[in-house]
Length: 142
Image (tube, rainbow, N blue to C red):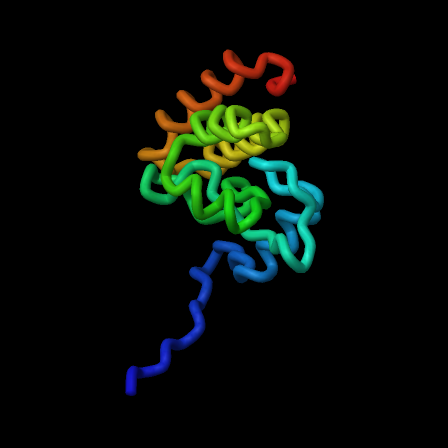
């Protein structure tokens, strides 16, 4: 039998990060009831998940500013692909990706990193994705 893990205790001076269910509810409330990548409405057959805009393997933080609402299919198929690459793939497949929502998420994440500091690995990746989304989808960056 494995030992039980005690719940994470927040460090003094740092706010407690919301749990998985709380983050999912907050992201769906903020982003609406559709998948950012394919545009499908969330329902019993299409459950929402949280998707990291900047993948964790690329240095993306696990916090609300780096998460968007996506369906399980899109979340699983995207893997570690860059957000703009996956957005273009979704368009190629005939889906309705939400480029303005992606631009807002990337901009909000950049502002949070500038405000809070850290995320040294994620910064160049995030800057490159912001440049690409602004160049590829000029109306989305407004």
